Length: 215
Figure 1: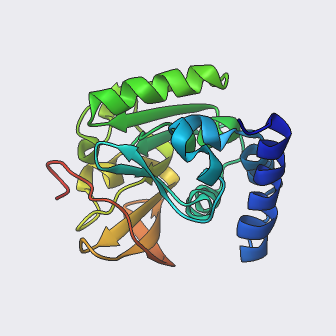
Figure 2: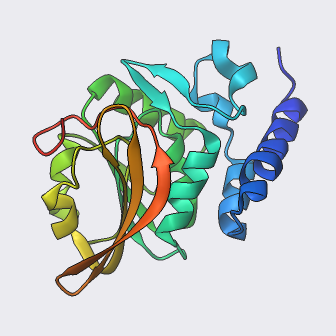
């Protein structure tokens, strides 16, 4: 059995060596990633790897993203505490937990009901309650609560789904990987009136975004 202090040390090293050294400086984000127990979001068999610099399988062909990718995407949203956030791809709920510590409320859409139920249990286990989990086609967003100050997509899309652009508030930021099924580019898209300004945040690789406006 791994001691609690060992997990705390592993988190601190993860933040210092994998995230801060790569240029992430947002103190609220670093604090959240230093406090959220990532190992509790994966199967116990993977606990010893939970803070390593790579993604991990979480079942049903899905993964929990590499810690740095979680940090990079979250940092790109520019959260200050009062935002309403839409997450596409709940997975095991780890990214959701980080977002919930940095925003006012998070709506998270997952197409796989089993993963959504697991994420709900994980979030309750770590005391995260300012979230609504939804089982639906995430490529359609969640129009019932739109517009959103920030939208994050944790799966690779062939193109940016039109509904997600439409559900962005003015000044809102959308962070999404777009490309083919082997490699994508991570984009930050900011809404300015009816214009959408795109910024290239670098290469990445995610599982497929499945749905009407995805693969």
